[in-house]
Length: 141
Image 1 (cartoon, rainbow, N blue to C red):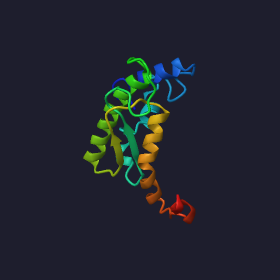
Image 2: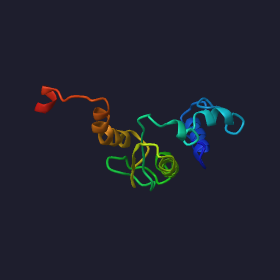
Image 3: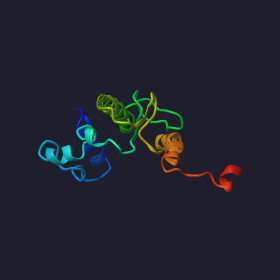
Image 4: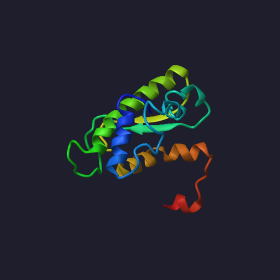
């Protein structure tokens, strides 16, 4: 969460949406203790036993179902930083031997169509994790 560009991206995105850019974890650097207390990378060694799933695109190009937007769209640009951040997080978890499920892919914008694709990707794993059983009605679909 405190990776290069991430705090600035969060500030820019929230301010651009009319939100208080400091409402998440405070002012970067000035409230560093609060940012660190919520940073998955910094807390990676404490995440053992937590069912982790994270995903991101890496190219900053639109993916399947994404709207046609300008190349400088924040949903595209942010995915480059988020993807790089997730790659570093994945590497850290591997170093610590902390289990996770990740889907790091190429094209895709940070938006609802991407989140729906990722929910469909992880849904079977979620259902398995909670030992969900297929109902007769679901089996008929």
